[in-house]
Length: 289
Image (cartoon, rainbow, N blue to C red; front, side):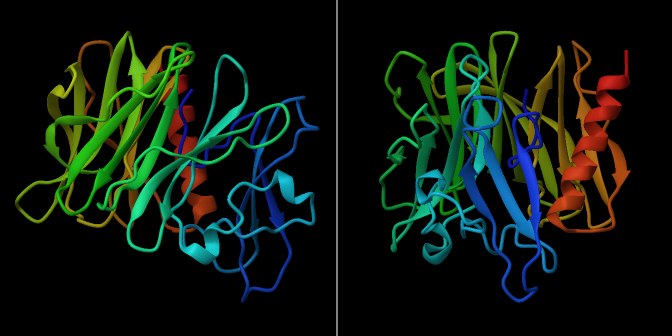
């Protein structure tokens, strides 16, 4: 199942902490006592929304070993994307790590004894931003983009193998990608300038290494980040994105084509409201025959 980058899942706890409104924090940590597996916990406080302005800053008074990347806030790391391995039930996390001169893609996962050592998927001089992760029964997939070239990249690792070479997603000039697998296919959604002051939502299907077929699924008059995300659950496939400051949009795949985009009102731009809108869209998709 794919929900959003900090998704609300049965094994994910969202906790609010009362603290001063002038010091918001958000942490990524594990609670191994719940469900007998590693559980990602995001803590936020009342007051100014800390996502994505302040993140990775420890909130709770817990064993430091349970924190992932507690220095990330001071360093200015990008937001995490979290996905639970459907085979092991354990969470995996990717993020853009600020090394001082550029951003690299960092990756970690929870094991029975703690967080695995942070692994750097990339180490080039380019900025690599906004990674998202998807895991199916066979492999782990990570996508990101490079703002200088607008190139979208993908990397894959089978569960018992090593990381394969980084791919370019068909030479697509896009931003902020998301990835899922569906029916044996690798799908990547991204944002692309439409040349007329707006943004297209582009879906790219992997044909072979570095070869993708692409189609425009939706569009927005806005050029601000839309954060398009692909989702799969119980045989359903859909994507959603921020269409404007007033609504979210989504499109569902009906087995042969993507349906025309539908809008859902969105008036509160906090992270919690974003989660609620995406959950509302998910419920509407799951309720359709």
